Image (cartoon, rainbow, N blue to C red; front, side, top):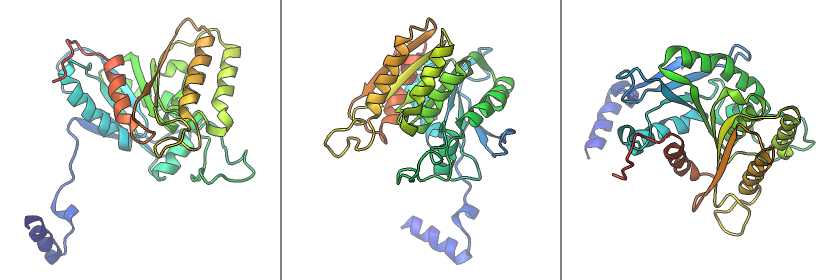
Length: 299
């Protein structure tokens, strides 16, 4: 009843809710405008500082996450809740990589996170390829290396040797491309349900090129896929691509190279699908890769 009265009052004054009430802002967060010099596309960099930031001279790990609209507030909430003040998960700085302002999320991520212009290679456009353009990942990765990472390192109390990347689906595909082209960009890669199927599994061809020209790949790589991301009968199982099988093949292929500097593992998360897996995935990844001072407490 109270909400109804407030709304009636607003309508009677011809005012919108936005004009009456301020937007909710996430504490300890900052937004930076950082347009890409190499493409002219306008991005924001979102930064979240942990509660202990500024209270110590310690340089914090820094986690860069794609698809920031969804993943940034989620990781922030999970870290603050599950982390137990640094006991279960070490405090770290979160950097959210926003979509381009001129695009909707689908068009932005489809261009920036994919390795090839799949539309140019297809005689007939697939109904699953709904974005305006694809194939801008190399340019976007260059933007991360030349602008975003230096900006964060110069402005925040973070450890340059503890840079983590996390991406899901196309974001995981982007992470795989960076791993196989400029692996030193990040120290740890968390690749969740990476879209390795893209453009006839072109990422496996890129892997072969890297193996031909390199004797080592120095990185820690953690791969995740959901139980239902395989083709089987049932409403939650995949019907078009087997992300789980692709992930296992990617892991097997990289392990077969015997790179001295590569640490790689995978995990299949039970009772999850492509849409539901990210919260479970990132909880596991943070506990494993950024353990707190302990002892671990479940609350």
